[in-house]
Image (tube, rainbow, N blue to C red; front, side, top):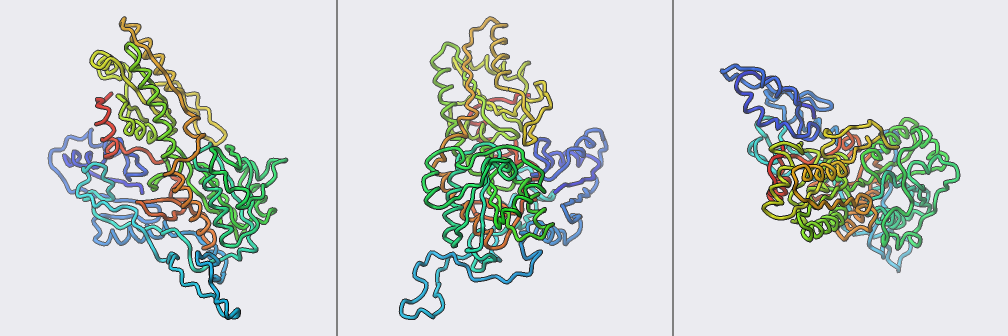
Length: 529
């Protein structure tokens, strides 16, 4: 939701508190431009605040008594799940999914199945996206829609098996594809998708090798999958199917889907992969194909909006702690030791923040959402001097996207279209060495870059459970007839979201969040700008 605000007078001070300058505009719904206007005005008399919010489909005027109803109507429209019945008039059939093994009395073979299992989700079930009723927009972490921080219900579709399905399982051909970079838990999701498809009665399951490339690259053949084949793949890291970045044109991928007669496509990937899945969904609809495209959010960066977390994140944080602990041991064991760890985080600092908070050994945590300077009276280097004097050693954790404004950028992109970042870790290593050499103080810098180690390992218990549920729910969504959606967890409930709502912008750490406050309390670091 983008928000346009008109203000004048000293009320700007209050407005600037509401419009926190470092919050992400997509997640927290505002524009920076108005705060700049406030600074240039000197009017003493306060005037009434007129606020208008524009969502994707409706313009809201907060002076209108019915603005909440309009917001919720627009929300319901945006978060309504695309369904194959939007283009077909199909009659559902009773589901073949049940955990009751004996469904028909043995004494009467002609009787109807007696399935009394109470494990289905009603199509009208919803889960609340947010549960905290913030009393003030200046409250820590507040995510407000209007300046009064009114409570507005935001409902999303609950995930799980439905009583009615829109596919005949014996006729279904299902395909699984893993895209982007590696991530702990990919094999767990593949495994559970296969298991759940077979529980429905699907016999024809294939894997598309090496991401979207597998749809068009000559010599790459689809891989037959079954419970027997995938039963133990979760015991290893990586992807059983292989991964790659980039891909062919959407039309070429859908041509391949048509030619292979695929009915369900399960796409495992991050932001770019989700955007690709949505494009495939749109093209299938344009061609009026009865194909369900369902995504599962995969990224160790945890940067997909609206979700509590993505699979692979917990394992990455746990693995990152090994690097942090190594840096701590190296730094503490050296005279004036400085342990420097660079962790992944292309657009957000979730891994660095959580690894720093969980380890308890980090003195400085630097993330892209919070600007910092290296030099000067309030810079990082000055603080490192203080730490060596008072403590004798220190540990610094930096996210890969932090401090990019301090470096030269080539503007080059990778195969997925992501900007290739300059190496902040190497830059800081050199700057620290030069700084302490320049002031004549000995400093022993130990630099650790575990970039690919944190994503190549097997999923831990927490991620394995998350992968299991997300994979199962993806299959339930496809059989329920949904398409262009993703299976995720929101507010500790498993839900379905339209892909269009999660690909607008990456999720970032809110500098006003309680979690970052906790991290900064743990490190004890000052403000570096």
